[in-house]
Image 1: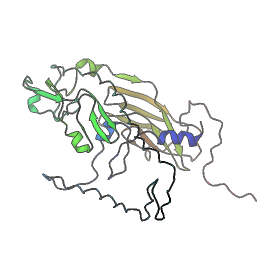
Image 2: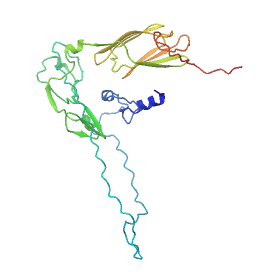
Image 3: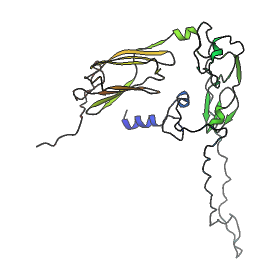
Image 4: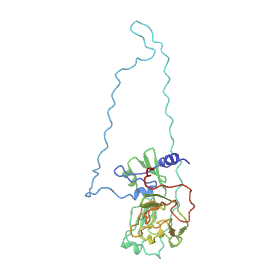
Length: 305
């Protein structure tokens, strides 16, 4: 596929962002996890700036004469009759996606950590000290469906309420109530961890470094382990928030400076900045990958003498 067509395809994927900052994400959960970009004092009223008023529409100066009218000398203006305006076709909303399966309750044998948010959509409760004791009095009000965005309107697939403003949409009260919140899930869910054998990756390079991306979503920063064990290998242990784990020893094509190399965990990927030790060009990221046969030039070409 041509690179221009591939770039056009990815650029048309719907992205979500805030007007005030640059991060753009694809999924709704990643959009909610974008950290705020401005700090200030708490307020009890909405002091966000109002949108700019619409520009006034100027009336046209030259208004055309009505059709089939009579001029001043009595002559009839036999212009063809205008067609009656046709109503614009009504656009129907796309069919709502099926509601995700409802999660089970927490396993009573597992201790609930403090300050953990409820997993159910629309429930903003967090665990407290009382959550470790008897929880028979807890009531979880949530949305069993998923978010739906269509023509500027925001709603949940499980209820009929919709809004244009995002803050109003986020404040919609849940339409279903269930006993006890869902903070950690069942013990079975916690033990069944999916092992990832391979992940998609790509890289680009400069004369001094290689910047590689491993595309894994929701990496747990607290439990992730990235060890530049040797100049030619990297030990990776990357658990995710949705019970997945990618564990491997990444064999590199060339040698790196382990002390200067670094890693950065993002919402959808792991970015590795590998400092080259010998400055040679890398045709592949891993030494066990097949070469593409392309000649990769690093730096500027010298003039022949």
